[in-house]
Image (cartoon, rainbow, N blue to C red; front, side):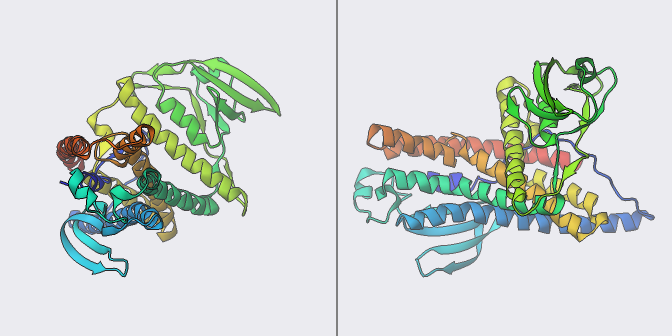
Length: 395
């Protein structure tokens, strides 16, 4: 078994869903039959949109691997979009077999020599085989996929803020009897830092509230040109089973010019990175469950909800909203693949870093067994997430 191939084909099966909740407004229909027909049509459209988003994400990820590999003289035997039976393939001039697979749940770049695990077999490989490339060339190749996802996310974020602007961290309302009111925060205050971390968009303030479980927060803000600092502890609200700072904001936006659009585009990526890492951090804090993972079925449900909510506002709104969703998924995919888990890019990166430090590779048989164990674990998790997503889909 090729551990690299198996891991790559699982790259899109799982995403961490940041705990950011939005109210989905469902349009009403007159007759039940019309509602059912429209619902079926909406689902078909949602599946097509999902396939489009999936294709963009996987192609960008795999092209990141491919382009760096070719730059370093590594032969790429196969470039797969999807998994399962091959629906279409084309042999490129470089000798790469470009394949479109039947199941839209992953992708792969198959490098020459990746299947060769024994030392004798590796000695017979030519200079363009992956194992014979320098360790730094292989590290760069492995990093190419996640980097491409971050780059795609940044490009999309720049386009989004060019049209929509960005939300400023300005307080619009302070809830009565909240921790924020007791600390003296007022409408019009501009939040600049929380626990020493700079705040650029109001949604980062919301993140601090979402990921808070009663920990103390040090908030720096500006009022009338003067900087002030308060320390508060969010209050627990039993009805919502979560802690709240007690601030409402996000209504004041900044329009970006030709220069600031790149700055605020980066702030968008920084926000999604914080959201993804914050969600991952819940695992180690004991506040994580299976509902925080989504597979392809769960992502289709998210796409369907987004389509249902935005279609009434016209195509431009729909396009920008799905670009925002794609930004989240692209950043999420980049982060997830960098996790140091067997069969993922991050797991392979760990072995390459060990090789760079030791000056010799880990025995390929042992590395292959570890990646195989990772593939089996991911397949089991895939099945659990799939059934959980189906349950949520029809709930």
